[in-house]
Image (cartoon, rainbow, N blue to C red):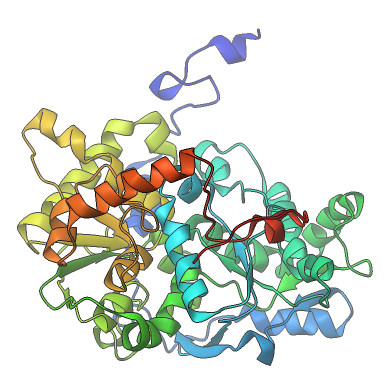
Length: 447
């Protein structure tokens, strides 16, 4: 073992973790974005920003790349971003780019989303041929580089582009829908770098060529990078009018918007004049609003959840202190919230899993933390355990469920009975595993 691996760095990590010795003003500049108020009141909307999509179309005309286009078959709905630019959100023929953190920590997050798609009869593919975006590693440790991130981005989106072939469709049939806010922000950054840098494109083409991930010798870049919360945003009125079964007017909802959604490549975040006056990003809030819940503002709305990647590894107590003091305590004291909804894996994990630590410091504040899609599924009659899977949450959800008129005890008893059926081999699937793996075996599917 080398000296470099045995020596101690910052917070007990290896020697490569060293104090940056930034000056005070440099440290402030490096962290200011965490507290930034990115909205229509604070951003100079008169200054012309570069729309990277314009250069993307030029590269396609020059034969440099292939753009995975959103077609009429994807049934897109047009929205506006921060600068009033148009963005098309596909609602059909979707390829699920799942989140490692959701599948590992918050499984009711993706199942609620797919439950909605089943209810609406949406054509989608939830296949197994996908990797993590690796952005967690990049932001959390600094181990990684732009080339590796770009190669993973292009590899996954190539798979989305060609995924329909094994089911008898043409390339581009399924369009990628990204579940995770970290992946979403990372992919938007990487797409920008790829379009701006011929050198980066050349480097990753060599990698993708070895993997067989080029189409006619070209890399495939999506027309839009689309987050699941944007799909939920454009579907919110259908959800409320066609599927909602529970009156939400007595539920006090606070919202946490993920930094990686609206502060990172902020020009791509969705804004809507009917939501918060069009000043703050619309996703998340718009769903609660459409369901008829009371959306309650609070003073630290713009703050990071405290996750921060690096310090949740190196300085976990900072993360816990931040999320308790700046988010949970404020939501409980100021907003008297029944629930806080989020739109990102890391945010929900941080605020959901760390509330218990407050008790050690006599900070006995607790708020249910779930995703916007989970709250919407509950409002539409989804099973709290089988579909929304609230049993995976560390924050207490019983009072919220009861206030919505759902019996927690009955739902729990029904779920325990269901588990006995599963143990006996009577397995029910939300999605047909045969489609996911392309293996022709007899499976029972359910909705």
